Length: 267
Image: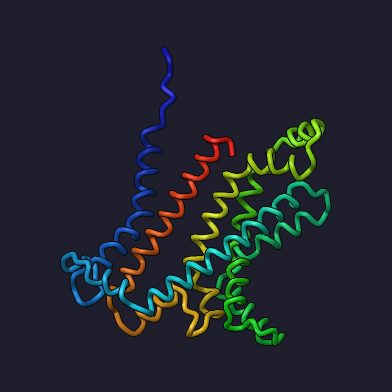
């Protein structure tokens, strides 16, 4: 008799339970943002778009949303470029320092965000380079936090990469850059896309580093939500969370569609 090779039932139960745990906070935020009451409570006192409209008409939250999007977009582009180059170097270099460099690049993931944010703030202030409480300094902080995730995903794709494919392209007359662009970059593009998504999501929701590097006129959405919940317990912050969730989901779907289109059209 043929044995069934389907997924074990216990594994399905554990996966479903894990997915539920991950989705419960999202559901709570959405329902809290649609609360019809005057205060942030759960379960909500009825459903209403009252606080969604309040978010859409709030100059503070809309400005913070725009700042978060701009910082995340710029940080993601820089992190993707630097992280991809760093991953290529780490996987192809034969230097004895590769292991130490890999640990150094991964350090922002291990260090608490509060420690990293404080260190950057002290560095900016003590050196007098004018980056404290500035947009440039904030972007640098976000790049430091997000770049390791790009390095990790791209490195995972490059570990089992067959370099003989590049050599075959070179033997057929392709330049090093052309071989990299048509062979290597095309194969690792899904990993780069995954790293880009991670970088954007982490930058958009970054709080600890932003707490030390942002200014009163340079508030990101997490900072605006923190201030709002600290001084007024209105559901507007939860409504802002709904739009943050929608942006993350939209970015993931858009990236997935772009990767699929590249595969279909051979881009």
